[in-house]
View 1 (cartoon, helix red, strand yellow):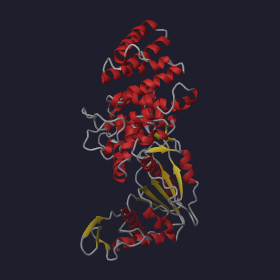
View 2 (cartoon, rainbow, N blue to C red):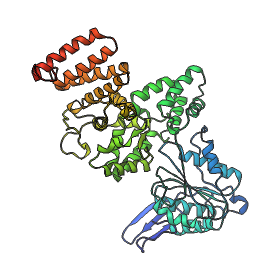
View 3 (cartoon, rainbow, N blue to C red):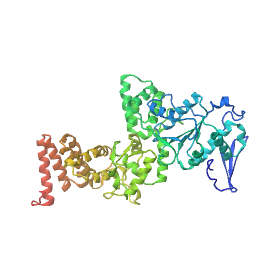
Length: 535
């Protein structure tokens, strides 16, 4: 089925609606499909008059009475011209759960309340949904159109919109803007709002308003208003919960509704969220199984990404084990077989608002990271990957854990700059939060003690900066990993012992450092001989 104004496919395809049942039948001479056209309550009433037209709408219910932190965005939509000719479409873009549809719905309800003209809300994930939505508008305007073929009814609705300039049409959750272009080319006398996860810039779809997460104070207000908890003790836990949810509106709403309905304490919910984010973010309040959840919303997006580019989801899973702060983009250069593959996958992830991408950095939302980590497949106990392997393309060898890929790309990035050189410190400072994040979340020993190398080199950077206290736990863990991976008498173990001893000496703990140095000497002499330079 094509949108009004677009090309007709097939030439022999027909579409009709049964006036009694409201069942849509479409045929191409060889097969019949059926879809149900949901008619508005006033479908059997006479055509609307001018007096009643301004109040016409089919807007869904607001998903929450609490609306906070979006006044500037709401004003930007209110300032859009809503009458006259030549009006361009405005799209509201953002990651799933950031509140695009909620913002547009608030604006649409203000439009209705002002009496400026009719408002029609159309789910727009596919061209068929848009055509059906326009046909429903035609029926709402005049029930006679219920007997028309769906395409013709939709075409009539478009012609009616062309003759007026006081309407608002919302195209919600647009997936592919290309089929909409012929339609938008005809609708130039009113206001069209599009909500989408996709980046529609340079797609000929008008201007773009990008929504980000809420300000921390707005997040706290949302949780307090939803739960009715305003004590100082509750406020502290609600602040921690808002931070853990990354100030994502849908996550806040989901948590607040659950807390209000179950009377669960914010602290208990926070503990549960940290221990099992995937299950917690998929849980709806009792009695409301159809409420949108973060996990369900992102699952749909991840499936779309996997079907579009098989590299996109593995790259996103790699980012899940790093920090939710800007990562130097060149760190990911070795994450896929070719740099072009990386750029293409990053572009797709950014287009679906799953990451924030600039010329030099990549950033992922912390809540998305938590879900990806919680749902990642377990590591194979048999994994023995090479230094850096493109595990999602390697068969039938056992797959390494995604955190191992994150370690490998970080190690390669770290080896580009000498941690002892002052000129390299800004670069290392950008890497540091991601190295600390992978140290916390890495699940299995890295091949060839790569994690130990990464932690040890990072310890050297911190010591060179005079931060021996911060370096100490990293070097202690590096030693533990190396001993487990390579054995207590391996030369690499001696290196780790020496580095740890140096750090302890910097901290004034020389009595603890001496036996480590002595052990390192014994290992080195036995492995390399008494006359080797390392000895």
